[in-house]
Length: 140
Image (cartoon, rainbow, N blue to C red; front, side):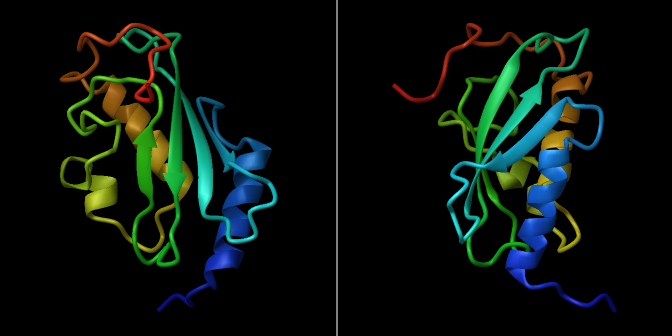
C-alpha cells in the first residue's frame, strides 16, 4: 500500500511539475493566484492537437482542487468554448462522460486530466466536430 501524501505536499509537487513544463508542452497548468496558500484554484491550457478541428487553438480551463483533492477529482471547466461530448453547455467537464474524472484514482493528477482531455480532442469520433468561433468563451 502506498503512503498517502498530505494534500498540500501533493499540490506543491504538482505545482513544481506544472511550472517546469514537463511533457511535450501541449498542456500546462499553474495556480490562478500565486498567493493562494490553499492551492485551490488553478489555470490550465491545452494546445489543440494537429490534424483536427482543434489544430492551432489554445484552450483555457479553470481547475478547482477542493479540500478533498486528491481523494476526489478536481472540478474542470473550459473557459474557451469547445464542442466535445464530455463538456457540458456551461463548459464544465462531465465526470460521467470523461473516465479520468468519473473513475478518479488517488494517483491521477492535473497533468493527466489535461493530457486526457487533449486525447479526447484527437479521438476519431471527436477530431472533426464543428467548433465554436475561435476565441469565444463561456463567460458573457
